[in-house]
Length: 75
Image (tube, rainbow, N blue to C red):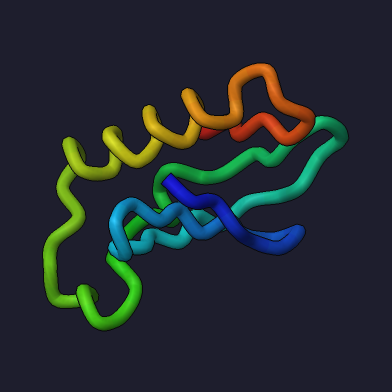
């Protein structure tokens, strides 16, 4: 998983399929809103983002950032 972003969103990328999660940067990490993860970024925007897919991206992001200086938390 590759994680990039700005102070207002993070882009979660697994094998080229990216999902954008809106949120807010806080001291020590980023708080992202699960409800903002609605669709993949182009060219995969027509593929559905199911609850299982969303949860997989969340689990991978939390696992990758655990113990780092920039921890992702999803609400």
